[in-house]
Image (cartoon, rainbow, N blue to C red; front, side, top):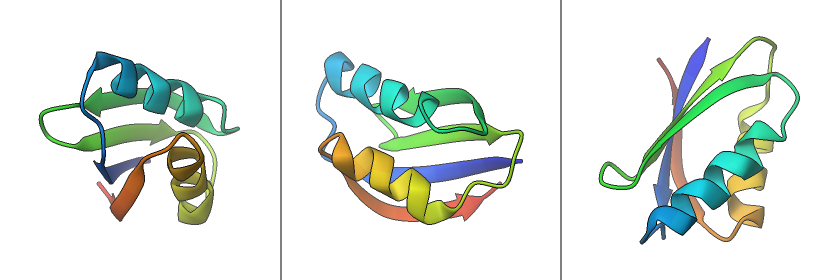
Length: 71
């Protein structure tokens, strides 16, 4: 399963790395691709992960989640 997380507040490569690292720490996340230009992250999951867990990880890293949708 893949999900797209729309994120506001990223402004540089360091932000992208920070978001990637935060999401990769969640059990069930196997891959993360973050687009600075597109303001989103695509997460690939091998387990059922609640949207609230994804949102919390990004927000704890200091960014705002505007939407999460299944792909």
